[in-house]
Image 1 (cartoon, rainbow, N blue to C red):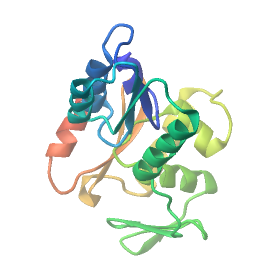
Image 2: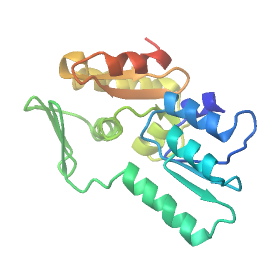
Image 3: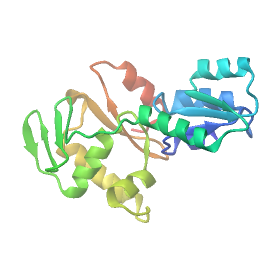
Length: 207
């Protein structure tokens, strides 16, 4: 289960205290070390003792509800977690390091110099820069950029990513690295001028 999660793109996890294979708590710890801290996690379980709640929250859970769960409250809690994890981006201009994206004009500059991108390349770039540090599966990339289910050769996405990396000069000198993730997809890393974040993420990536 934990390996499957590391190869998929998920927005949120809802766990039970007991699950097949790993316990919900063990799965949470494994997920936090693999996918990262951004993905919100809620426990929804009948095992709602205070000690379980404390252990789950201490291990990195964002919320904990016990059965029976009222549907309206449950939905509201889910929406609240998603809003906190993925705040709506209303600004047309996105600036990250040397990169400046204008979503209305679909233009991008690097260190103030305009870079010509096709519509597909711009959507692909904005997807990566809106999900820094997050593993994006090929299925998810294809659905978000091309707007349909993934039915092409994996080389389709690989070729587009390779050309985008060159066009935008996505490399350590510009404080970013776009890396393939083994048997999954890609992840854009912000290097922050050091190697700590980079070395942690490289553990599950290929060259």
